Length: 239
Image (cartoon, rainbow, N blue to C red; front, side, top):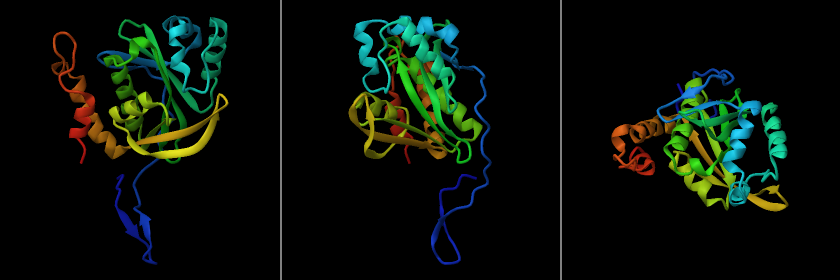
């Protein structure tokens, strides 16, 4: 199952190997819980106000620079946008909580292609409270574990090629750089080249171990500082 070797057909042409695989189910709406974070499906009536409180400050407008929407001038416009997310037909939005139930950010499974087992981790909006936090890292881990346990074969991450923070995050989270699509989009009136990163099931097997080791309580000092970085553990698991 999920072999990556190459076969040859009757004409001696290289072809992909046959695989014993069935399309995964549509991701269910169950809540995902870890040691530090919890994920649940977006409910605008419950989540709009607390999320707005996390990002409602002029200094937070930079959160929206590389996204195709925002910043929003007031709670009403933010609420209207959140409602459109819930109504999306091919994206499932998740709110990221701490274990006290406080919403701190959101992201989505997008471009869901069950026929080919492909999905995108997209629409990443981390409030300042999530930046470089254990909660954010575990949230990504929980969603990736969810995706690959369901049977998806590939998860991808793409971002504005100029967004260095997103590019670093993708690599830290275990995605492999796959290239740049030049002039891929026009966003907010500006050209956007798009950097692509991907993770397939074999990548996940190695990344899963790195995440588990990083999230283990033994990897943190008493003051909460990490002993080994996730990036280091990811590199150590590369073959």
